Length: 433
Image 1 (cartoon, rainbow, N blue to C red):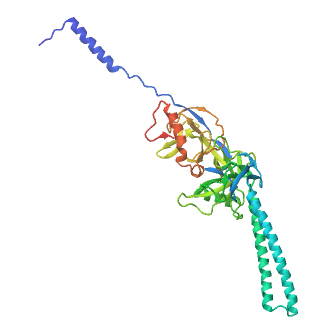
Image 2 (cartoon, helix red, strand yellow):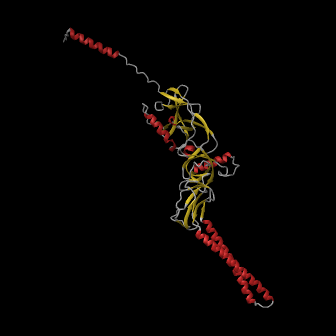
Image 3 (cartoon, rainbow, N blue to C red):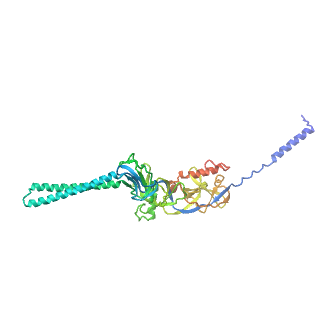
């Protein structure tokens, strides 16, 4: 059978075939590779300082005295301004002395009476001894006179003791400060009856010494052992003195201070570790000539752990976490990144972190853009010079000695916040600190 097509139909078929052939011969449009990610790189900085640990401490007065009345009576005078500096033997309170003056005078009279009685007994004894030689006194009579003389001696001794006690009571009507220091508030006012027995456990006032001042703090046993090891290392094992005997240096700062401006030394280490807390009580002594440090303040204590040594420091944001491991990305001469596991040390002010192992001081690492870079990829780099910062740790041994996860939380938070501003999403197995 013959199929006849019109000219229009034939033309449409030819056009369709031509389009089909043209579509088969068209080449796919090439897809260009994305440009290398941009990152900022820097070399670690090397700072020399001693390892240290930091602990919370409390200031305490070297001497603290609760001023108590030693005799009872009505308060007659108050001779100080609350909060002022007083010296040793300054009279702070005066109790009405009249009753005690009367007792003293009576005791004086009793001494005079006892002296007169003793004098008479001695004269009687002397006469009796003379009469005995002439046979005018019996032995029994002589014994009686001798005993009377001994009794009067005892009476005189008792009278003198009563006089001394009366004199002490009279002196005690003047309540004095036994130490030099700052006096507190007066808990009794003029005209009140005070007693030698403390009422409600409250003294008349308190006096605390201000210079020098103590700071007490609790140290974990690992830091104690490390400090002892560093002490033995420093003295070559020849010096058998204790840490307190070599005046191991300490530094403290108040809550509103930067740095550690107050220097002192260790003067006491307790004799046992508390098994419940695993800590031992230590105490430092600090000069306080300006009276800036008041007893009861909370301070931060810095304890050095050995001699100064070089520390390799990098920004905390340059450290990543990979399944619990810490790493940095090293950029080589070909601008390719290398995955490098590192061991962390202490943390310093300004977000710097020590690298104890895994990185050399002359290598370049990624400090910004860690989320965009991947190990083994090429990157476009912008170099930056890091600035050194002084050590300013917030953690004790774990931070200074081992670099624990607890001391890394601040670095992790900073890097996560930085990562949130990046456009790329990290992989499942790699995330920044």
